[in-house]
Length: 303
Image (cartoon, rainbow, N blue to C red; front, side, top):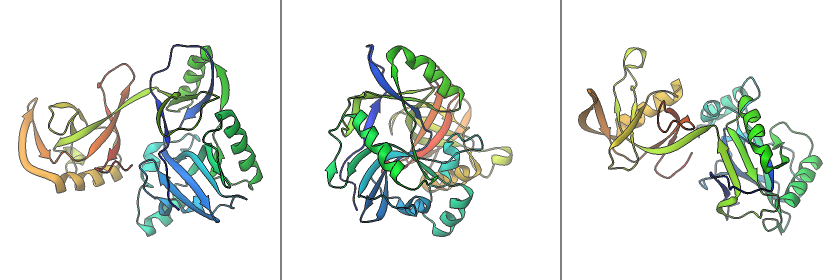
């Protein structure tokens, strides 16, 4: 099995016009295409990489009656039942023994929000309203399994966006996804799908790091980030790391350090090859103040 298309992506700017939308919660997870073909399941990340081995609990479900292609989000739920990326990040491993341990400690859930093909039918040219009905029917026909869920959605008016967005954020979600009911599924970004996040994110190049102090002395203090590989530093980020990411990041930084240092605001920075990026987050409306590390982006763009 091989993924033969790019997923549909949402724009970030809400058009100033009336009309109806489907509103869905924005999950804090990893986008994934799930393909069942001849009773075998394959899972592809947004980057196109086959990551079926990482999520064995998704491949052991009772199979659908027909071949099927689903689009959705892989998440790990916290104790409140809300997706939390820091938990999912621990599942980003290809070590079989660790996968077998983590699948029981941090089980994933796949929230399907679209269906792209069923049997020999390509459904991408059908309107979203029709695709949602087909998706619902298929998930209903399959014996209930907690690892595959249908993403909840509600049809709303344009003026209802703000209160629903605030409700979702209060419940702990990243924000809201809005989709036009008549939208077709197209590869790449489309204004027919909009994402609004309470937290804004940027992808910045890691150009260096500061030394850690105290209990983080064996790791690092902050990542030094720039908008381009040879650009000037725009911010430092030292929060958002757990023990796993601290260890992983330290190994990567040591491997790619250039052996050169310079000072920023009186603090020494170890320079590294600018080949990795970091996704950082900050509150909407605060530019890059109080950034927090979200995830590492390797050179090939993989999650």
